[in-house]
Amino acid sequence: MINLREKEIWFVTGSQHLYGDEVLKKAAANAKIISSSFDEDGLIPVQVIYKSVVTTPEEILEVCLSANNNENCIGLIVWMHTFSPAKMWIRGLKILIKPLLHLHTQFNSKIPWDTIDMDFMNLNQSAHGDREFGFLTSRMRKSRKVVVGHWQQPVVRAQIAIWSRVAAGWHEMQSLKVARIGDNMREVAVTEGDKVEAQMRFGFSVNGYGLEDVTKHMDSVDENAVNTLLESYQTQYHIEDEVLKSESLRDAAVIELTLRSFLNEGGFKAFTDTFENLGSFKQLPGIAVQRLMADGYGFGAEGDWKAAALLRTMKVMSSGLDGGTSFMEDYTYDFRDEGSKVLGAHMLEVCPSIASEKPSCKIHSLSIGGKEDPARLVFDAKAGPAINVSLIDMGDRFRLLVNEVDCVVQENDLPMLPVASALWRPKPNLEIAAQSWIIAGGSHHTVFSQSLTVEFIEDFAEMAGIELIIIDADTKIRDLKDKIRYNEAYYYSNKNMH
Image (tube, rainbow, N blue to C red; front, side):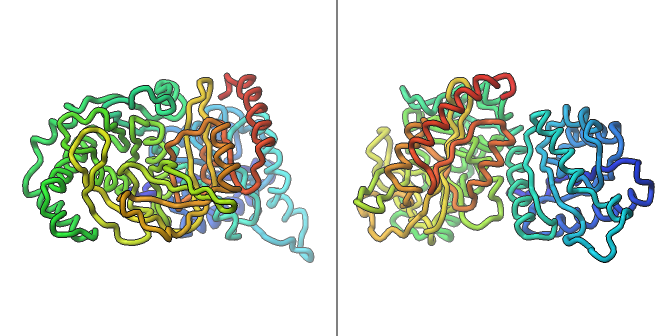
C-alpha cells in the first residue's frame, strides 16, 4: 500500500526582527492557521507541518539542514509574511536538496480600506517580501514551483496538492530499486540508457538479475498459497470454469507468487522482464505483472527500466486519485480523414487500474517467445482525458515527453486479439502528435495515466531538472522543432547545472 499521509511538507515562514516581537507573534499565529488549514484539507494527501517563523540566516540554515536530514520531509512550502531580506536565505538554499514551493499569498484576502495603517503594513508585506525572495531564488537558479493567490482559494490548494504528490513521487524515486530481470530485448535502442547517470540524476538504482535469481523462489511457493490466489482470481475477475481449472492459470499463479517473493526479499518496487529470457518460466508473466502493477509496482517490458521507474513514481503520485496508471505501448493506428485514433496495449502487461469494468481472465496463445499459452486480464480502458509519458536518454541529458490524449469508448470488439487495451485520440491529432513524438525521440513504451495531468509532469521535470516536451492541443510542428533546437543550445551551455 502507498500511504502518502506518512510524508510531511514543512511550512516555513520568512520575516525579520525589524518589526518587533508582536509582529513576529502575529506572523507565527497566522502561519499556523494557514498550515493547519492545508493539513486538514483532504485534497492535499500529505501532512503539512508548521515550522517556526525564521528571522536570521542561522535559523534558515537550521531548518534547511533539518529538512534534508528528515526522512519523512519531502519538501518545503516557503512564504514571506513580512519582508525577509533574501541574503539571509543564501546559505540555507545552497544546501537545500528537498523540493521547494514558493507560496505567494497573504493572510488577508482583501484590502481593509477603512482600517489599513502602518501597523497592518508592517505585518502584511507579502506583495514585496515574496518578490525579494523570488529574485534570490531566480538569481541562484533554484528549481521551485511558484503558486500565486489567496491561500483559501481552491485553485491555490489544487496546485499545492499536485506539487505535494509530485514531491512524494520524487522522494520515492530517490531510494527506488529497480530489478532488471533478464536484461534488455536484443538490439533494441530506446530501452537502453545510462543507468549510472540515471541514478545520479533521479536517485533510483537499476541492477540486473538472472532468471535463476527469481525462479529459486519458486521452490518455496506453497500449494495452499496457490489455491488461495486462484480463489482471489475467481472473486476479482470474470473467469470461466475451464480457465480456472487449467494448469496454465495455476502456473501463472505460481509465477505471481514467485515474483512477489523475489521483489519483497530484494526491496524492489519496480522491475522489468523480457520474453527473450524466461528461463524455466512456462509462460510470459501476464496476470502476475498486471496484478503487481495494480498493487503499485512499476514495470517495463523488454528490459525498459526507465518506464518501470517512471511508472512506480507516477503510481505514488496518483495514489488515492480516481482513474488509473499503467504501462502502455502504441499498438496500432486507426487512420481516418478526421479523428484518427491509437489502439494502445501490450502483449499482456496493461494494469487493470484503468479498466472500465470488471476484467476477464483468459488464456490464449501469444505467438511470440516460444512458451506456453499465458494467462492475462482482458478489458477496455475507461473513456476520458489521459496522458502518455515517456522518459528517454538523449545521451547528453534525459528528456521527458508527454502527450495529452482523450480516451474513447471502444465500439468494436477484438475477438482475435484478447488483450487489455485503450483507444484514444491524441492531441492535437494523431498525425501531428505522432510526428512530434518521433521528432522528439519518444519511446514506443509509455506510462499512460488517467489520474494525472500535464501539470504533474511539469512539476516533476522542474524537480528533476530535466528537459520537458509537451504535445497538446496547441502543438505545431515548426514550433516544436524550434523548441528542440533551442533546448539543445540551452542544455549544452548549462550542462554543469543540469
